[in-house]
Figure 1 (cartoon, rainbow, N blue to C red):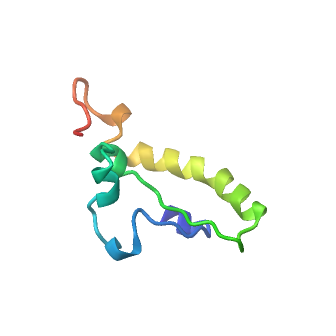
Figure 2 (cartoon, rainbow, N blue to C red):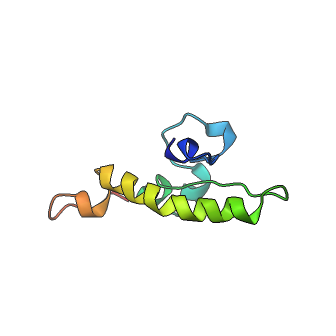
Length: 87
């Protein structure tokens, strides 16, 4: 949603799993740890995209990721001492 508010179309998974809170079954089948799979982002770039659009995404994405990490109770820096992210 944060990317959408910035005019960037993105997804956390495939179209067939939209609305699901579960991580991508493809990523988990590949052995990607659950905490990383839950934080995945899917972007599609095609022949109609411009370099300016890609540069714009690269400009806005780091700030959005930082804000979301600051809100996430699962982000390692926000976990209580001694707790680890479940994989």
